[in-house]
Length: 285
Image 1 (cartoon, rainbow, N blue to C red):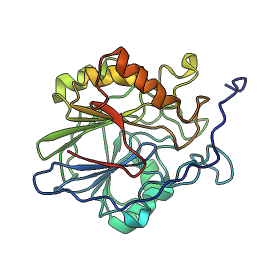
Image 2 (cartoon, rainbow, N blue to C red):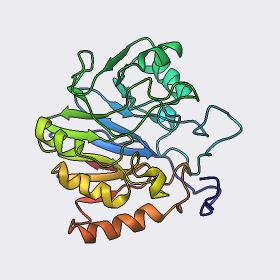
Image 3 (tube, rainbow, N blue to C red):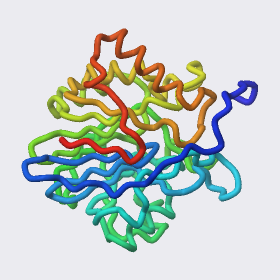
């Protein structure tokens, strides 16, 4: 990786933050893309936020590490009341303790996370943490949430690799299923989620941070594999995430979008069925 020359990203890309629209009568959810793997899922049973990171760097250091190129599409102050927070694993671009503390102080939500992440979250002062194994359903969330598998790894530092579990989530709202993929490589777990949980109405799938493939293929899907996951899940609609925010790998800032367009053609998937949202963009489910 040190010998790989990365594509140059712009220093910043303008984003105009929005106030997320509320669900209207008869809608199961409104989903808003905030940035990277942070999405807001508003439902009648309560609002959910995924892997919330409002930090300026995806790093344990405030002065080094991947820097935010696009600001969040929804300002922290404009978030609606949050009832549940999904934390897929403990990497810094998915688990920002300062953001989690701020959410806890403001909304007192329940934090749902795979096994053995409880100690980390409670060490940050979070008061309501439930950690779950794959296929376990939350007992504390205001709506049905199940932790499902992912193909990834965990670490906060050099000495704790794979000491905590990683995962994805299936959220049920208004009779619809929303799958949040977290971070994952491609594997049979997408078909297993479909077999055990049923077809997915909306899949939130990572499409960025995938090069070089010899290094990343086991832990990060590329856009072609994300489209294959969309097919495996029998998703009615998929939204790409995990791109264009922090430069974690060498590909260019727009490479995931170009590759996603090619993957749709290769797998005969319509653009309407697998697309991306603008930063701050929303869809109604």
